Image (cartoon, rainbow, N blue to C red; front, side):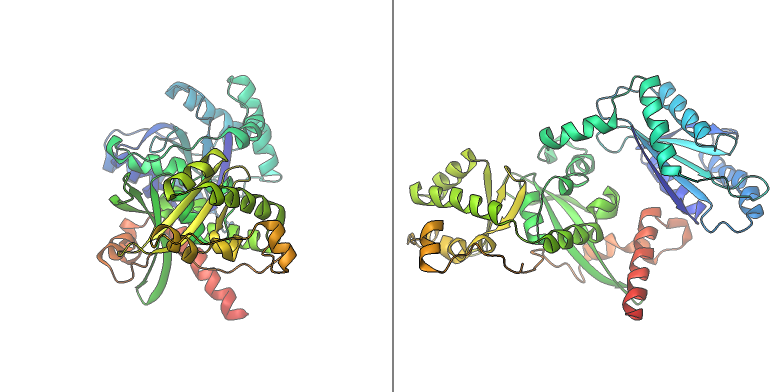
Length: 423
């Protein structure tokens, strides 16, 4: 089991975030600790606010008194509602929050049920509850609960899953599209290395998903983010665009940018690059058609994503090497694998000659030297579109419509602007 502890200032926003899950039948209130449960939904929500007020009013100097904790058993664990309640109560007691008012929500909007707990980290006198070594204590509590409740251990299973994780393509016809997309985009960036957003999009295409970068101005401020859209088997967009914030921080533009920057700082792995080129070169020599070329690559554990414009011209070729879990734009591997060369072959019937690794070395024009990585996003822009206003309308509404995750995104954007201003 994995526990995540978040702290904040906005109690209303946290409660509203969870209430929206309840309203959409994607969540329910399982337990209220040290406070009554009222069945009337509207009355229930306002009463919950009131039970936290004395603690917040007495708060002496704690800047972020709101606790928002998630408890995540392994997807293979079969946990009943009663067991979920026992897990939540045990965790809060062990962490020193057992005497606080707290609300336990069960969320079921992704492939696994999990808990969200809302509470405060100050006592009745306004004094902050001891949180020294909190992360370490939290991990110890999770390990103890795994033993006591016979749950799968998160540590050992995480290491095993790294080598055997299976992602399923989204099937729009089966419904629950948001959950299907979540099962991919929340975890996929942890398993594959890519250097540009275009390469990330090529990877997503294998799972019938596309992502688009959106920009807009709301209340005089420029906003940039991502939306995810499901695709059918022909690659046509289906369904409603979904904000990246719905899938957690790891699926957002900030986290993906940080991941790409880390990869760029590490530099190109020349052995991976050379090995992939050799595989592509062999398939290139043997294949007589695009279909045969793709089939030969697939046997070697490599997929290829081809971008074509409306006239059929190829303008992008990206290789996904599942052996090394890395994604490569063709021209980043070698100028021999540029989109122009593949267009000559598959669109014009003029198969070019490309050099092997050895031949490149002999000619002194090898592509396999450490090089700078070019950037580019590869995403379609939707600035000014109707969809853009729908995606970001929460930013322009009153407090009663604030989304907790979106507020976190806004705070991050403001901090970034401040850092730039101070630079």
